[in-house]
Amino acid sequence: MGRFMTRLRFAVLALAGWGLLTGAQQQSPAPAASKSILWSRTWDGALREAKIRNVPIYILVSIGEG
Amino acid sequence: MESSTLPNDSVISAASDIVAVASHVDNDHKSVEVVENGVKVRRCTIYPNLKCEDHVRTSEVGMKYIKGRFAAPVSLWCDASGKELFRKSGYRQPDRFLEDLKEALGLVPGKRVGKSDYDRQAVPLEAAEAALGDGRYKAAIEGFTAASKGDIEPLRKAAETGLAGATRTGQGLLARGRSALESGRTDQARELLKLVAEEFAALDCGREAAELLKKNGERK
Image 1 (cartoon, one colour):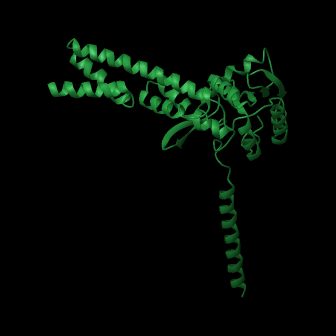
Image 2 (cartoon, chains in turn cyan, purple):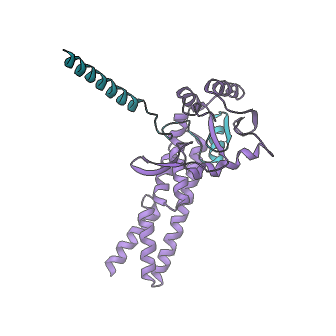
Image 3 (cartoon, each protein chain N blue to C red):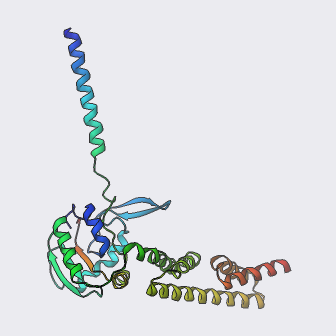
């Protein structure tokens, strides 16, 4: 009975460990370049789009690792 | 910018109502290789739809508005002509960013053109302009032709202007090819005519070049 309980505990711990491992893999962050707002490639292109669509222009002035 | 803001779903969705420009002053971060439309390309890890060269090129934009020393990041909001409406210093969390965006939209009243309607015509136009700059005339002509069929008049006019420019280039090359042929410089003529026949195949000059090549080949 004692040996059975030890094996059972080991099996439960192994399953829990596996669950944690796979769960951690699923929750690992997506690559940094996966998604973001869309940025204009050129200033002239941004101005043209803003004028035609009649929308505001947002300029993010940043340095380093944003 | 706050690292939680740019990838935020609400921010991404709302940003389709504005035009965004990254004025990123330095280039000390990484880029990654991704596959887009079956082609491997390098993309910036901060601005994922751009190459780092793109935001390096637009890095000077912020300096049009900010003079001297400043504490980064700064969010500049402008009207559709590029006139500054207001600015916010420091990191903007998603909820604050969305408030700023709403305020900017309120300061630019009037009828708008949706992002998807605009992109349907602008994406082929911009691809054509880039292709023309690289000397890829076939791709340029395809893009200009597609963009010239859209409903947005300024884009249609830009596409027609681009197409006219490509046509002039093709006609010029065809004339040089014809001249080379007439003066007996056969190798040069074939090279030019082949280029025009392949790259300008959708235009009259391309078809003429193909005909000349065919006749010249038959004569040989």
